[in-house]
Length: 494
Image (cartoon, rainbow, N blue to C red; front, side, top):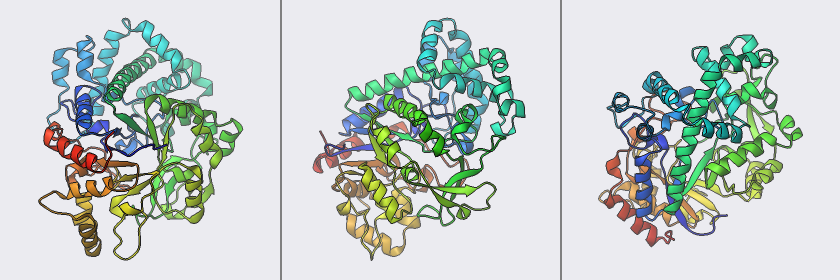
């Protein structure tokens, strides 16, 4: 699958620079693509493009298929006459370093409704075609969002029973909320039009998009509302058990995610139709996809509802190799497996038997005594090495705040780290030198940033998670030239 040595940069779209409070699919995204091209890179890895959910997380989204309307390029909408210059000015946000999701939720929906009001007649034909093309998910999503909006943003679990259970009120809801459904569908039409154009621009520059498929869905999602039979729910529509992981390298207490678990017997009985649709959707959006928490295909951690700790969970068998093989048969869907965490021998054998490239994380490599599979010289060719991920500390944060003195000394010796060179660059060289055919560096590590730039700390909540943004000044010739030289040195340029 990974045919040649290559490399790329991990930067969420939300973290792109821009004046409207969050990254967008517009000119700054193209500027970053130009930067990657100048730097000799082959991949832009992003986080899920779905709307954020609880805790502003893209892994707790109200939809597995929708795009995040907050990422729309407002300036393009203004050029099309859907927004005014005054409205653009009012949408500006002064902080270039952080996404303020609370502010976005207060201000952006009303602004986007104005775009819908101006565009619904002009784009009627295109919107009807889009609705038909996306009919396997868009009507359910648009109705779910319209209902949630009508109920003041209440979560599905708090909806009135006659709506939460859905069948008796479905047609009445559709009739009564037709205008609101149209607005949500229109924003999806705009999103996928802008994303398709951005992806085409990236591909034209030789940059492939590496996307992300969250393994689970949110309990407050269109999928759980529209297709409850696919999940482990009780008669009232509440989860009977939820997802998470036991204690591992990320946390001593384990992680209690709270996502509903799949009813794998039901999925199997349908021939995994929902998963096939999801795979086909991913293949349209991305050139390669990272399957989040891949080990759950083998065994998943089931936490009883109401458990005080993730430690109270237990392992249950997942769908196994039959689902992996089905996804591999989806045309155009190239996969890598997020295989991190505490894996037993059976899980490791399952992941190896899948044949999918796994992940190796540099900051976990420096056990000063034992031999680590994450050390660059131990990485197999059919793998992807990262200096860090969106869930880890940045390399500099780990080096000086979290590594033990012995780990730090070993990292200095192994990577030949020098302060005058920049510690992040030493990590890049170590990853790029490895046998792994694909090497990825988060933008924070490329810039040598510390704790303030961490994207997410698993098991925690707060405005620091998912909010970091890069400044446009980072996309400069000095950085791109230096990265290109390293990439050429380690034979990762095409």
